[in-house]
Image 1 (cartoon, rainbow, N blue to C red):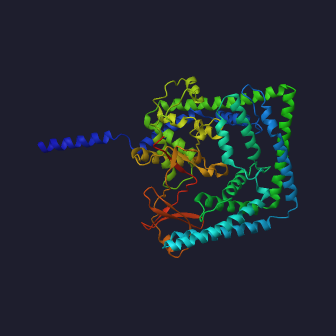
Image 2: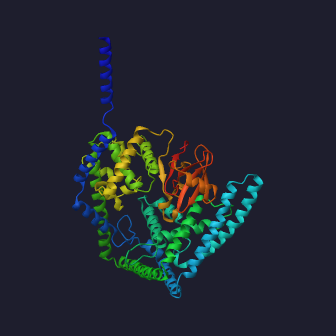
Image 3: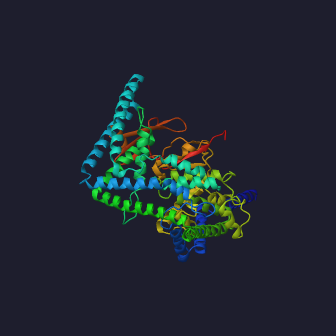
Length: 559
């Protein structure tokens, strides 16, 4: 009888334990996806999707920036200040077209680009020899030798970039970091002085941060021109024995990109320059005409301002209103589903498919979001934020109890939540393609794993992608209160027989070395366009995590 009693108690305990665990991960995901579809049906249809596209188009207009003052009057001073620069730009592009018309092909330039690539690869070989030099004297000798060769390469590369007049920016070399930081100083200052400075700085950026456009496809080559600017500015006066990893990466990428664009041929570049000249003349004439209308007090300026204001208001109101409906939908659900919604929405927009199979970057971005949930800097929607008004209009007045949703919609944190970014429609019309659904399911599994096992050692609350910035500028250089986390490896590679053989035969190209948070060294190698990480200490290979795509930052303790 006692045995039977004990057995019954054991069974009851087991049953209660099973029920205490709650639904399995697969059930939670299934329930979430059902809710996600319900939200999609409630906030999106073809009419909503098409209207948002039209509002974006109306907001963008012809793409020409018109500086207005706070009172709605045209900022004549900003335009007048930059008209001489516009005239110089027109003369500059005409000269480029004239010089380019005298060229027959890019054959010689392409050959020179390949010589530069060979010279660069030869100079980079010193990194490997220095890394494995056994004595200080040997290291010193190699550093001196490398410095001489790096200096010669950079001088030749500087001359080469200086000769590529048809791929240079107007006012080459342009300091994109300076222009961005200057604009950021004034963009949110709602005073006459602040608005004037903001208008002037932004108009200057529109003039010098410009590129040739394909007349049929409409694609600009601004990213190439801005990368040339950035690299050129950094190699001038460089006086170290070895390149920094950022500079090495950018030079290597620039040489490859130049190779691709040069192989497209001279005719395509010439056509782009001709079309660019046409657009530059049209823009200059447009600004001159605006000044004439301003002097005659033409009503057309008032209409332009009203139209632009209406388009801006219509788009912002529509996007914020639809986003508020999404917020309202998820606030009614259980907290676990709010967590999943916030995390997977951020991951699908911020990382997408730019990750390894394990999800190294998605997991770390998720950890950043998790770290923000209890941080007042990120987990509230303040009354001065535009989205706050949209929530009130939709009957959502209490938001403090929904920190996960607040972290997602917090102003200035995720670019896809800005009303003027086309990706913002993905909030109320989430991607329902097969590939998106497949990625969403994978992300949900990862998110649940990260929620179940919080990483107490991971303290980052910010991340940054240098590769996505114009000119590859490093905005983190402006974040005095943050420090970057050391670089880390990707997942362990289990089948390394071939890689070990290649390493022993010295067939892998050594790129650079980095140290992890523990101070352990890792070597980064490249083989046939694939990059690998090798631990000398453990003699193991790992997948490579590109630090130029994602870098993570921790707030310093004294801030």
